[in-house]
Length: 178
Image (cartoon, rainbow, N blue to C red; front, side):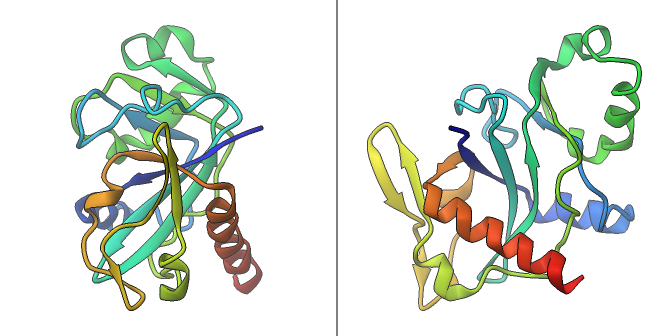
């Protein structure tokens, strides 16, 4: 059974993607690294078939930006040698995602279109649950449907299946509106 994970994108990265005209495009690559600012997908346990939800915390709201299924993860240093010729241009196109120290490239089929304008409803924030080796935990720093801090989202975290379904339905309702 595939798992779902969140990765927090910074507001600076999201602004760069918006300015660069990436809104509406479907990501085919993501990048991970050894540091908290650019966390490792492998270390988080992400595997082929899993789903990644990129999220943004902005002004007390959580914005699901996009989702992408993981096809495979390759070492960044060896990406040029390991990628098929048709995959290499994807690395160039998605260069805004490459900031920081990198060690891995996550490849997948085109994900959902990048959206920066539709927050998850506050009532759903209070129920988002993550899974770790120590058990389940709710999203921290949520009061009255408002996300007061993004601290508990920094990194890559596995979502409980019900929480993944909530975010997935959010994307599905988005596509129905578009």
